[in-house]
Length: 203
Length: 84
Image 1: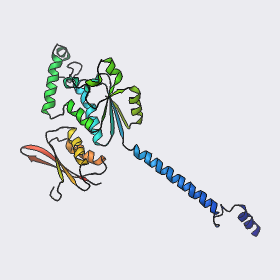
Image 2: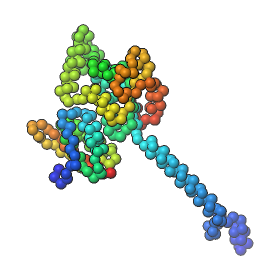
Image 3: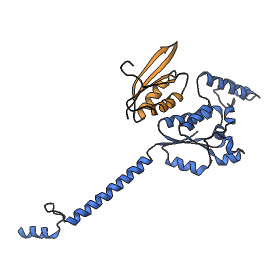
Image 4: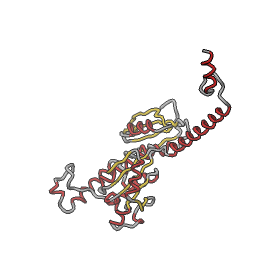
């Protein structure tokens, strides 16, 4: 038995729990620990940088009723500490158009909840009437205007983006939009934002 | 709220969803740690909205909520403490 013990002791010092590790092994381990610690702190910093949760909304509709949900959700998510981007494309662009946003219409046809039948709703002037009814209801119920929600969203750090392709398509100019609206963005940047986001919504 | 004094009062009477929560957030940011914000609203939805906001927001603690009638209208009062 004594020969076995001496053979093992000669064989590999490092694996013998009873013996002191060689000084160079300790130095190696210290270096390795230092490396790992700096790696962990780098990773922590990376996670902290990207710590805020993110929401992206694609706003595609420009009627008065459909302009509200994206802006209400966007400003609310910002209050919860989210980084929020709303990408406005096609008729959703009207929401960011300073002049047109104050005159968004409600459709009196195609909505079974309207108090008028479709056949009446299709008559000339009916959209104007239903829009006026809706605006009165909005004011009576202390609901914010679209303009107020846009200002609030921008002030809360929400990024409101206007799709460049739609700007060109509808013949608009960058100056037509509210101050603070981001122009010159396309589907690729919207997609990239969606990839990074925790919540993605199409409205 | 009898035992605690609010450092600031935010009046959001006459404002509807989502404004009470958004303005609460804004006022809360200006608070020093340990201070309490009083929010006075007329929007009945603010009871669940502000509770939910406090629940999901680090550093915000909902101390108390109460309903009262002032000048013939229902008001909803919220007390939020900044914990950090």
